[in-house]
Image (tube, rainbow, N blue to C red; front, side, top):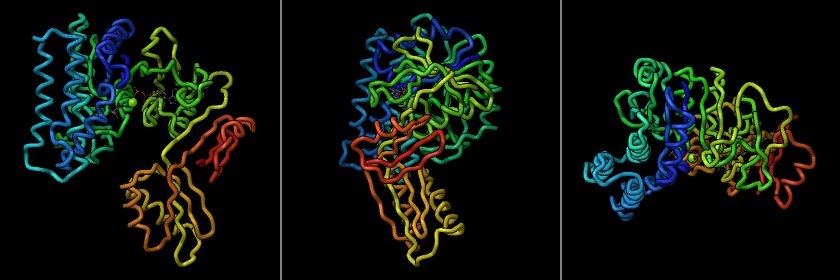
Length: 417
Ligand code: ADP
Ligand code: ASP
Ligand code: MG
């Protein structure tokens, strides 16, 4: 059994969907579970619909029109006008519209998941129908019946035991000798409310399935030849890496290499399942293998994590930043679910670098403002260099203001402006 994942870029138009079908036919064949993300930038467009739900001045259900138009245009390039796919899509659209007419809810995160999740339903319905059209037999699966989570809307935590049971009883027989098409990014609570696993979470969905199906491998099809030693959109000289270890991949993705979602690695490493990162633009290419070992020698790897904020907490009563104070700081970060990307301790100050998520930072301040003076600096980036040397540091820091530096023998990190 194998698991394939196709992201939004691969299915952004009719030609993309035809290309994905040909990849599935050529490299997937039987015993393949296919996980698909929403088409193109649909998730962002649905976030606008959510914004309109909560703010009457923002266009109401009309905000759904561009989403409808885009999906119907894609379908026009794939199907005859009497294809049953249109009825399925209409159902999804009207489900979103009906929310605007129902009793309003003030639970932002819950409504967010109910609306934004529809993007993956639309893309998977289209892909499954097109595969049928192209003579590739497949079954469409509603992933919400399988991936069970808690009710942390927008960042749901997977219940591995329940999900494992459902994969064994429902998905294994479905995938045997067949192709199953399902959605990335989604799950559901025990009372069947839709949840999402965090933005860009479809790679993780694929890894959950790979782990629970004991898959031979997982392939994520991307718009790059594989993993490179830097994002080619930032580093024009980036080179392709043939093979990297789970350890290298987990470090890279943790520090912000967005080519693989950071949560993807653990479920694969735990079962020693290789991850292939291949190009949907050039499917013949070998792609990168993420597995037990690194290739013979790794070049310096560069990662930039943008939109960072530096929080400086200073004790109001001149107390030292010692263990009990640190514990209270960490508890506050944990309560608001704000990840510490870098930290540094001084006598009476603690510096924390975090993603600049305003709502979480505001809640954090409420917990800490009685005991700490809090200063915030925004518009920063973390530069991470793995397997660095002096030259790579000089080259990549040129022209930047450096606010904080940390080094180990393999990793150099600086906070830059
Ligand atoms: P998906 O379509 O699955 O959502 P993404 O767009 O999230 O895929 O990921 C692919 C993108 O990741 C590439 O277009 C590239 O710009 C970016 N990227 C960041 N770091 C790297 C890296 N080290 N190697 C290759 N691509 C990278
Ligand atoms: N469609 C979701 C997002 O854009 C999930 C994903 O693409 O992985 O965040
Ligand atoms: Mg993506």
